[in-house]
Length: 280
Image (cartoon, rainbow, N blue to C red; front, side, top):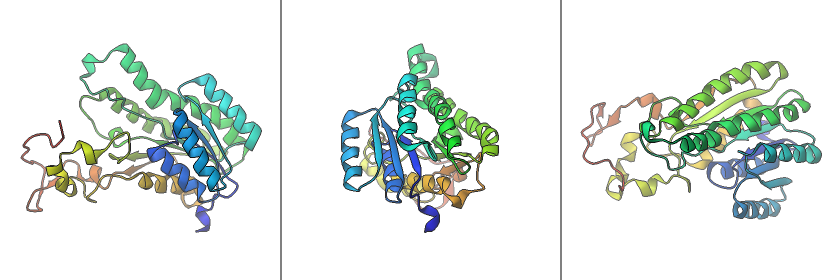
């Protein structure tokens, strides 16, 4: 489809070495984009460089910590020098950092770490990228990967959830600011997605795997390629009149709003629970 041809477009993806980020990188690469990838893990950088070189993709894979403002500024200067600007920015980095505990038990260090990796870096990278997007003229796109937790509460991960909610407001407000420049700003909010970071196939006890179809209307957890498809849409002319919005990439989980199917395939919002369903 011509609308999904990114030949000549420059696309920056943060955290593009694995999981959702890697799937997004590969999706743009197969459609002709010139790639910039910021990845903190050196081994992932090396692997991605090799893969993109094999596909003859024009790419800059940088071992960059996007939580470090100086490193981000240096990367943007390199992007400007090599590519002359940006057409698409995908803010993919985010992580709950394994911090699952009551909010009252969180330390200042916990809060700062969660802020840095889930929200502050989006501010830092986006602010640095805006001049590069503006330099390419109208048609730019900023996409942030959020979470389903941006639209519901989640106990024991309160701060992470708060930062995901903040991405929604950031997306809506920045869309208003950049609309006159022809730059669209959107977000993607996935439900749990099978990646190295989070593996529902391992976390959910084997005897409960068959019940996944009862929890999510489309009967499965996410795949990285699901997010990649949304990113392609939001970066393309197919979504030329879409800005300030978030795609709920959740298999219908939010629409269900607590409704589940019981063992007889009847819907209920008062399920009888025995155990927590996990391997812990």
